[in-house]
Length: 434
Image 1 (cartoon, one colour):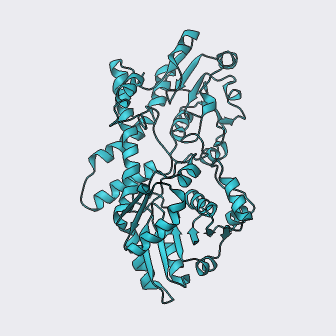
Image 2: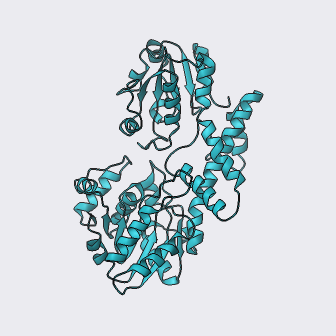
Image 3: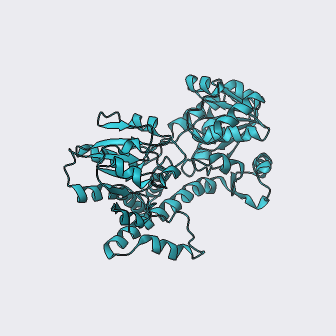
């Protein structure tokens, strides 16, 4: 098939590359000339395992093309995926300006009957608003159908998720559109039970509810962890006890210092805003969001409890800046809150992350932060270690190396990845809910 993917951000780039990998002709369009120029050279703007190789190989096969010329792409394709950003407004609502800008450009350039598919996460009803806008503003006499095909990509394993999806949600307004998308996705799945067909608005809602449910599990467990800490209970034991129940399971029930990223915070707030706009106050969702923001302060509170509110004579080693492992994404990351609060109290920071240092620098260009090239270099002359992101390389500790470099044997473990046994070696270990 011949496809246009508008937007070369995280979702658009991964989606376009994976469609090309299956032998489709894919035109990825973006208004950012520098980004398109770099992509043509195989320079990827984000870190995602295996993505760069896939982009380069499919350009060499003439299956994947990058362009700023939307008209050229639309003239050669009849399936159009909208995959531009939908950032959060200050009031929690969803900024659809990029989506409607794309709709305007489609209306001005579309030259043949086409299926327009929203891949971007958009509020319920947006798809039909896009269709109405294009029909009212199109220059050429063409027919368009609209469909919603939400993405469920996890940063760090996005290629795996795209190439081997656990479900494919297709929201369409007619059988013709559903059939086209099913044919497009059939090479990705061996089991057709993974196709889930529904109406457009239900598909749009499904994306929000999926992320809100996962965020709810995380905030719930963090709240339970805080209760456990007050009552002398170990959250790790509780997690094992409840996770063995097949109705609950072990995924997303790990206590920690809060969730981040571009999806969970934005989509929870977006669903809250949609609810309020439609006359319903979503009490649980509001608390999910509030609990998560409070949770990002838990490690800070433990540090203050240990050292006091004035941290001006202290240096902290920080391991992990990305909001999760296997990505360089720091959007809404707990590290931003934790580091920011420590800096406000006068502390100095020595930080290390395998991939996210450069993206974190864009958030903090502060003279009191030193970035190091290895995890152990960050420990030199630090008064304590703070673990924020659970990269694999942080899991096994060389306690001899820590003892040589850290000024004090103090560790704040924001992801509960270390064993209490290290306390037998003279370390003070501060965890969450333990």
